[in-house]
Image 1 (cartoon, rainbow, N blue to C red):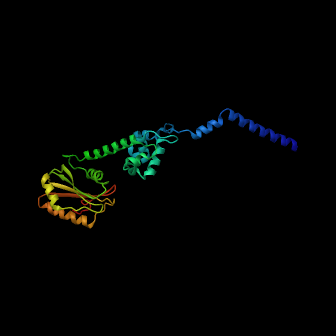
Image 2: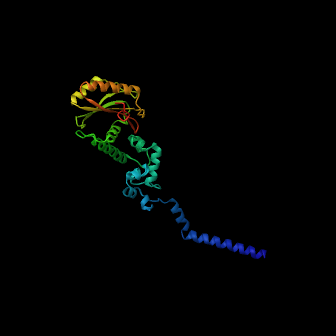
Image 3: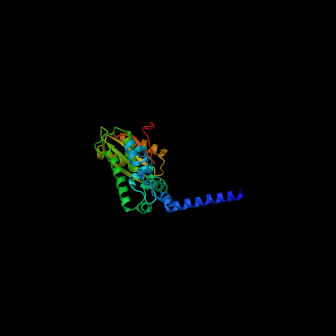
Amino acid sequence: MRCQASLSTQQSENRRRHAIIRLMMSGFFGRLTWNKECNVSILDWPSEERPREKMLLRGPAALSDAELLAIFLRTGVKGKTAVDVARELLTQFGSLRGLLEANQRQFCAGLGLGKAKFTQLQATVEMSRRYLAETLQRGDTLRNPNDTRQYLLAKMRDLPHEVFACLFLDNRNRVMSFDEMFQGTINGASVYPREVVKRALHHNAAAMILAHNHPSGIAEPSKADRSLTQQLKQALALVDVRVLDHIVVGDGHTVSFAERGWL
C-alpha cells in the first residue's frame, strides 16, 4: 500500500510538472508577465469613468483636479495613464495652483512635461485671466458682486507685495477704469487719500470700489484697513464720489466691507 501511494504521489507530481511545461511552451507565463507590465489605457476604463466622457456627461465641475489635468496632458507615459501622471504632478507641486504658478524650470522637471506643455499651460492660464477681465470691461455695469470679487481675485491674489487699487464707476455703476494706485512691501502699502481723490476727479467718477490684497493670504481686514477706509470715504464725499465697497483679497477668498456693514 505504501508503495502504491508513493507511486500515485509521484505520478501526480509528474502530471503537475508536465502541465507547467506545457503552459510555459504555450506562452502562458509570457502572457501573464505581459499583462502585469502592460500599459492600461484610459480607453479600457468604463466610459463613465473616463475624464473626457465624464466631463461631457456631468460637466467640468464633476471632475477632480487630477482628471482636469489629465485632459490637459492628453497622454500618459510608459506604464502610467494621464490620470496617474496628473496625480503624481499634483503631489509633486502640492496643489493645482502650485503647478500653475511653477516657473519653466520647475514645470519642465515634472514627469512627462516639457516646454511645449509649459507654453500650452501658460496660454490657458492667461486666457482664464482675460476671460475674467472681460466680465468687467470698460462700460460694463456691476450687476453681480461675485463677478467683482472674482475679477479682483484674478488681478490681485498672486501679487507678491501689497497693492491698493480702485475701480472707478460712473453714475450708472459702469466700470470706467481699474487703477493700481499704490504698491508696498509684503507687509503693507502707503495710501494717500489726496491722490485717490485726484484720480477720481481725473476719471470724473461718481462711485468707487476700493481694493487691496494681503500677500499673507489672510483676507481679514485690520484696524488700519478700517480706519483708512473711513478716511477715504470722508475725503471722497467732499467731491461727491461714493465708496460702494472695500474688498480685501486673500488667498482664494475675499472680505467685503459692505457685506459686513462697515460702510
